[in-house]
Image 1 (tube, rainbow, N blue to C red):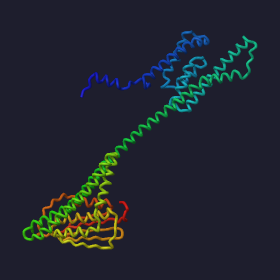
Image 2 (image 1 turned 45 degrees about the horizontal axis):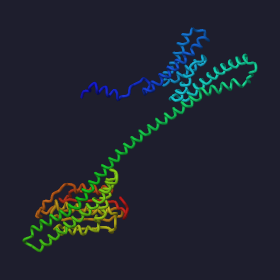
Image 3 (image 1 turned 120 degrees about the vertical axis):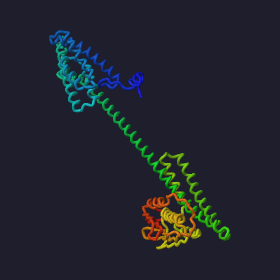
Image 4 (image 1 turned 90 degrees about the vertical axis):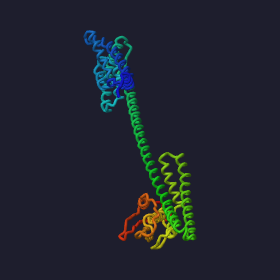
Length: 444
């Protein structure tokens, strides 16, 4: 990509020009004007200096012009300006340079100990020159007016007031401007740091929102899989049995058809309850809350849906009975004293058994199944073990997405439990999970 001359001119016009040590054009104009005025002042005062020092007048004027022009570098080298003004104080020239030099020194970033030392030197020099000049004027007044009799304190006190009146205002004003400039710079840096922090917080909020959305998608997919997969699998098994016995045993076919209808209605009811909570909660949250809160609202909606319609361990007997009605041989063994657990613990335990039975219907049709539930002091354990598939059983050709075991592992790990699954030596399959016990009503 090439750049035309007009583009370069426009870019140059937008970019700030470098003015040596000046940051802005008006600073250059101001310092040049002050240097010109100071040079003219010192040039005029150089005439008197040349007469007192018995020098040619052009030499005194040239010396004054050179001294006065030093004010041009007051922003870059304020110490140099003050030292030159102190050096020419005995020559009674450079008053403007002394005033502006003290202001520039006090407003600069020069260490305060150097500022105090140079300000003291300038004050002493001005005080001495002022006192000498005033004493000469008083002596001339004594000659001209015999009745003028100044006391011994008059010359020192008046010289002190004149010196302070000349040096104190620029020094104090420079200190104020320097402090104000540093304050503004610190506020600007603080504003920049706050802006960076806000940007980082916004990025983190976006990351948390993305994480919450991903977690919510996973949660909804897991809930939908658990609700749909088991009941639809049983419906397919019953439908296959219904097709097999429709002509041979009409009474059994009617019974199977009724079971298919009941399971379909139960599945639809659970889906409606879950989707209803999501439709009510998530849009309200997304319209009134920022992006990071939408994910939390969605997660809360899913948790509310699970708490409202989620099953518990008391429903395990009904779950096992449904598999028995589908033709499976299922034995339920409960060990320990049954008791109530936290909502998520009971729902997770139920879902693990439900998904394990669903896998049996999908992959091990006709196999004998043993469901074990153990109530222990600090945990609850469940195990679903099936034997080898019955070769004589008809395959229902149920599809499998491979998400059942993954979902079970995620559920159990999310509660701090342990999940193990794998084939058995007898040719079957075993699913085991152990969940830590939470008291009733305690959040996970």
